Length: 388
Ligand code: UDP
Image (cartoon, rainbow, N blue to C red; front, side):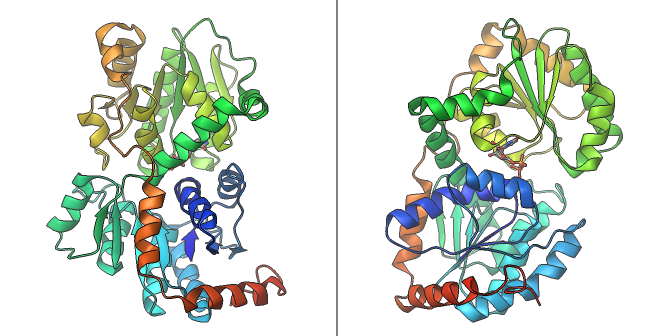
């Protein structure tokens, strides 16, 4: 059973689900509902949908966790899966982990061991540290992540697998190259963006970058519109979309887009000269396709991209952001070094490694239990089936 609720979880668990199905398994994906639309859209990009949706949408992490734990624990008790798999560090991740352990199930954590070593970002650093204390299997994407787990005394069950987000990226990149119809649909939202100047992609959504910090970042983007086409898929959170639209809507050379389907976002990354981002997933994807990346944060748990020279931790000061972006847009050695593709987060195949480890330790009877439970809830109304 895979438990997930946000866009990055959908992207990073999709390769596991596809691989499990290819092996004749019947993985059960339980959606928490945390990011309903973006989650469903990201899954749809891989031809997938959740098997069950708890529909818990809430404003704050404590409310998400509070409302989910009991509902998820009920599902786990009823189905007794061989493994409960959670990914990353969201409120859904923590709730899924707590539910699995309260219900006595075995827990596996995909993308384990990412640490800033500070209390930030909050609550994500707290979530992933807590999950590390609960899981029996820890799939660390890199050697540094495995070392961070060892340093916290996590004994046994740690495997370095690569990040399954890179599997997703390579899969989508190949599909875009092979399937002209998909490529046409995917690039639909980008039609009309002029090609004469470099494309600068920006994604900003983190809690710590809201308020006055966001205003500063938005002013940096407005300034950079003097030399690049600025493309912003705007996060739907009102704390982000309100200020971004108020400051940038209607500005020349600024293109505000809705959150993009994954295929479109990959197509956009492939065509951009530079990305400015506070996203975790984008920090991992950019090096793999040679897209120079400026990280709009003071600390990052993804240092591998900095070490490979593809990303720069530029911070949140608009003057520093503009200066760093200009240095890259100017081309030359700075840009060339950052645009050399590298695979610090794995080179694909993480899902196969993870699934092999899971299946090696899975009991035979759990598959039958899951199947009969799936059939029984299929005949009950969608949300009431799982909600107390
Ligand atoms: N992404 C997407 N559409 C967008 C923006 C991002 O599909 O408009 C993808 C992106 O490629 C990456 C994931 O969503 O795989 C990152 O999600 P997000 O930035 O929301 O979360 P984080 O990675 O910071 O947890």
